[in-house]
Amino acid sequence: MHRPMSRALGTILCWGLLLLFALPAVAQTRQQKVLADKENVEADGFWIYNDLPRAFAQAKAENKPLVVVLRCIPCEECVKLDDHLVDTDPQLRPLLEQFVRARVVFTNGLDLSLFQYDYDQSFAVFLLNADGTIYGRFGTRSHRTEWIGDVSIAGLAKALSGALELHQDYPANRKALAGKRGSAPDFATPEKIPGLEKYTSRPDYAGNVVQTCIHCHQIGDALQARYLRQGKPIPDEVLFPYPHPTSLGLVLDPQERATVKQVLKDKPLGEGHFQAGDRINSVNGQPILSIADVQWVLQQIPAKGGTLVIEYKRGQDTITQEMLLPPGWRRGDDRSWRVSTWELRRVATGGMLLEAATDRPADLPDERMALLVKHVGEYEPHDVAKQAGFKKGDMIISFAGRTDLPRETDLLVHALGDLRPGTNVPVTILREGREIKLELPVTKSADRR
View 1 (cartoon, rainbow, N blue to C red):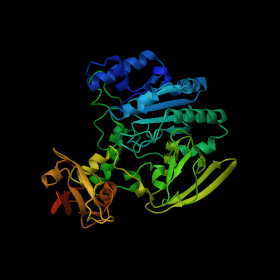
View 2: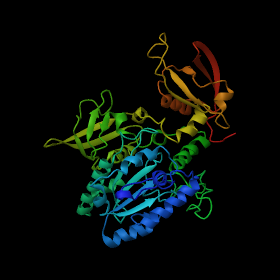
View 3: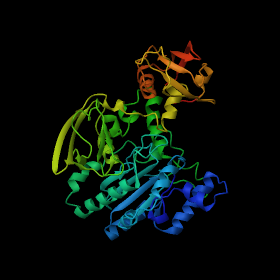
View 4: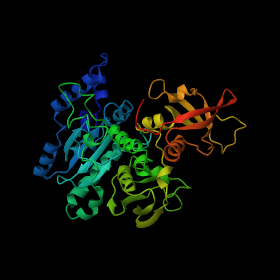
């Protein structure tokens, strides 16, 4: 994992933007960019760079809270995020100065019992006590390139302020914060996960740092591959990690501290419980500082269903709602934006990228699936669909006899969970107005050709 956090005006700055200003005319390799980032951030001194033990020791000695930013390289789309976070905000610098600040740009050796987050993120913030108690999380993503609906500099400032309030009350609030740490994971650090054993506990800055670094999404890839390797369905808890509140009917305002911006009807949490302006104070007893905190609580609810107890403020009133999430509730989320979905596409769709068609034939019923093939893998092992005759621009209207799979996510779930390994799936497509029947091999295997 790699991609940093900043210095200009005390805000978060990605190396890509930094180098854009510093060396606008010089093209650099990723290796050069990573090394330049290390040099610049260490020279500035505002952030402790890749040294968590030092950061925790300093936080303990100074009785300060700790902010740890995990920043992934490469993720070119995230440069857009940093462009906005680098804007001057009069609240952010003085807030950050009240924390011990640490930035980590790889996950090698990362303590996964403490740092549990959505591994498809490339920008994750932890707000902690020096003893490892988590005050809150910040950093949310629900689209490959667009981020404005999920995070903002104002939202980060409010999360930092909330963490300072919790730190002021600590340890009296220790019990309420206990649920912000998860149970012990199956693997203590990323390089112990099957498939990642070739990596060491730290990347090689003296050699090829990029190739020896474990990126965030590789953790998610490896956890998925465990099940594929065993020929088992991927559990919904792994396939749909950290469900986004929007999938349940709550659109939260990224500019605020877990405040409802819009309620979507016909969703589990959108049926008359909330209204715009409601500010969530706690979920299942845990203080909430951001959208990411809500997602953490949701991650603890099993796919078979469970209860949410949400306390929120509406005007001068404090309201508590208890709601039951039904079995299969996670599947309402969308996983197509995730980097780790590329490997699932190899397995389930032969390397095709699909999206719901916006320009449907007039004679195709609205209830009929219509998935447009946006991309077909050209090279092994992602070229299975190409070899089977699929082309960019095809429209899938039937898959394995199913016509009720409106999203790519729905098709992936069906292929990964319901089809036997090695199945040749009948697929009906529309191409230039003609209906064509093809067969697609679904490998359902972690093994590549």
